[in-house]
Image 1 (spheres, rainbow, N blue to C red):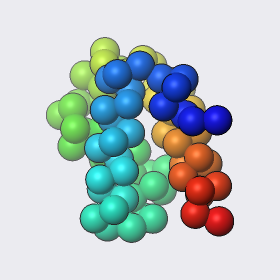
Image 2 (tube, rainbow, N blue to C red; image 1 turned 135 degrees about the vertical axis):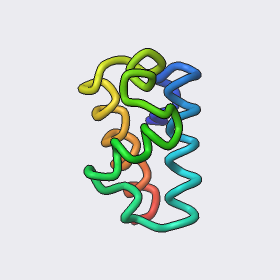
Image 3 (tube, one colour; image 1 turned 120 degrees about the vertical axis):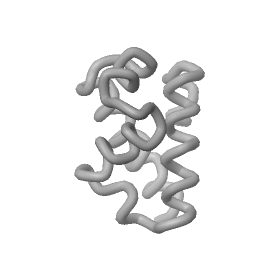
Image 4 (cartoon, rainbow, N blue to C red; image 1 turned 45 degrees about the horizontal axis):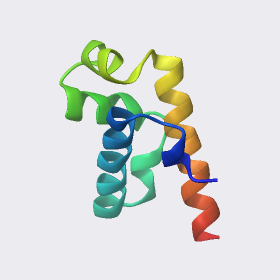
Length: 75
């Protein structure tokens, strides 16, 4: 299934941002430790990201779900 069907506009916008970084810099942008960096880049603070996207667990599950979706397209 398409992950974009399961998320709201703001979450989709974040994933599009992640995808743009991935296209610029490659797969290391999808490392787990990059998640806070990406959130800070886009929202200036994790707290802002949580207001937009939901709590950290939710953000992580979106991020990892997106990766799985992406990798299944590549392979």
